[in-house]
Amino acid sequence: MTFRIGPRTSQIIAYIILLLMTIITIIVLFFIIGYVFKNGFAQLSLEFLFDKTREMGKEGGILPSIIGTLFVTVLAVIIATPLGVGSAVYLVEYTGGGLLRRIISFGADCLAGVPSIIFGLFGFIFFVIQLKLGWSILSGSLTLAVMIIPTIIRTSEEAIKAVPLSYREISYSLGGGKLDTIWKVVLPTSLPGILTGVILGIGRAIGETAAVIFTAGSSLGMPTSVFSSTRTLAVHFYILAREGISMEKAYGTATVLIIIILFVNFVAYRLMHRFMERYY
Amino acid sequence: MKDKIAEKLLLFIAFSAIGSLLLITFFIFQQGIPLIFKIGLSNFFSMHWSPTRGQFGILSMIIGSLMVTVGALIVGIPFGLACAIYLAEFSSKMVQKTLKPIIELLAGIPSVVYGFIGIVILVPFIRTHFGGPGFSVLASSIILGIMILPTIVSISYDSLVAVPNTYREGSYALGATKWQTVVKLLIPAARSGIVAGIILGMGRAIGETMAVIMVAGNALKIPHSILDSVRTLTSTIALELGYATGDHRAALFACGAFLFIIITILNIIAIRVTGHRE
Image (cartoon, rainbow over all chains, first blue to last red; front, side, top):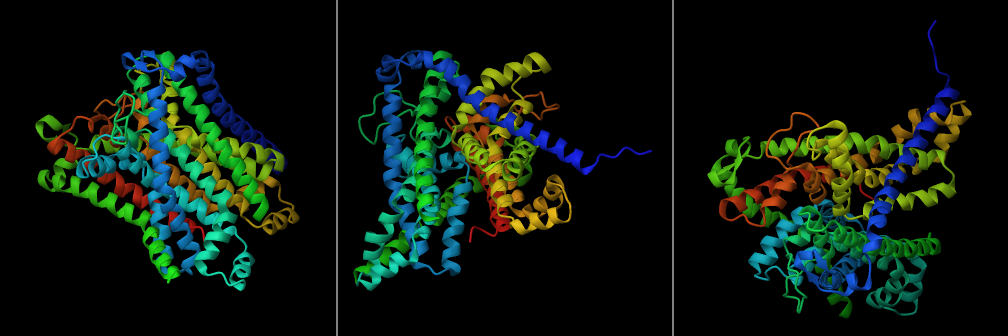
């Protein structure tokens, strides 16, 4: 007599296995964040956040890294936003499908899949060496800008596509030109969606290590201009942890990094959610 | 007139992504490829990496990258698919709305944090319970497996949800259970999306650098077991770029060029399989 599991039983077994695996995944996520927070919160203090870094990070705080991260990220976004949004506008408003559109989309999709170490190599040879910008905030942010352009293009493209055609038609019927329509109707309407892309780009830039360490360097001094080398939070955390300089400070830095990134992603998610509710 | 100028300007801007891609390709190849011709393909694809003696063989690193990538897929695919199927077919709207963003949050956590968790938890755990140095193929595979989960979950989930409801209704009407419907109907129907998710996850695993450096041990030899230390292409680039000069630096760019070709092929397959987003 052969033993056979009936369809009802196999359904129940499958359900239990799927549920368990999903629960394990969620637990792993919470465990990673929880473990860092549990060890890191004790390190947080005003002194840690607003003091200079001393003895390679063994003592003192992380202020230079916070400021460095801020400079690199803001500059990267300032460079990448016009390029990303401009590309998206062109894709949706000016190309009616066809080869040109396919080439541009293909470029964005491929660029999105390039690993960060390749951006690091490229930034190092192009910005740092060929353009003689040295290890600097400027080199780091130019490299990051190239990296986040696809994120901004993709999100903005979706947002601009979601603007109802009737909005554009009304603008034209009132005598608005194409540029006026884009500037005064399409962009303001799709702004929350575009902002989501920009914020996701910010999140990616803040957490990046491989692309930044070879372009912005790892100097611990307080940055004075865009030509100063700097050590971003992610790079500082990497060096603290990998070289075993100070585990306490590593936990503290990781906690700050994760809090910033969770906050940034949460804001992006809320914005997107609101935007989608309005137009989909 | 203003409209014409704007259109030209926007066209120029629209080429920023593809232009950057070409610029990256040009510089990585220009720096790396001449060295491959100089030392010969057989040297480049040999086992010996000893920059001080002019030996730049990357075969052991290719094998290293391959091992951790396969390991990551073994960890990531079952969990990724299970989450996607559970969320898409077996859970309520409420659960979907809560869990999907939470899993997507995983994608936002910086790779150095995963590497750090690897150092402080996973590596000591493997060392005490399974032996070996702890820094190993196993540790890298688990960390990378977790890192590629969100990619696999979100793309598979989206393609499962996109299967028309009439499929499900037809299957239930014939008396099939939910699980039978998933296995016989929904997974085959969503196949291309699932495959694309896996390929993109694979690309992410091959290209990941910082997390792998932190947990792989980076010894320059082919691992004999999953508990041995391993060195990947990406970690070689990141570990040595800081001080490399001359031919050595060129060799690192050649590694980058090789990596770039592999990943671009994977990307193109993924884009093809999904037929893009239109």
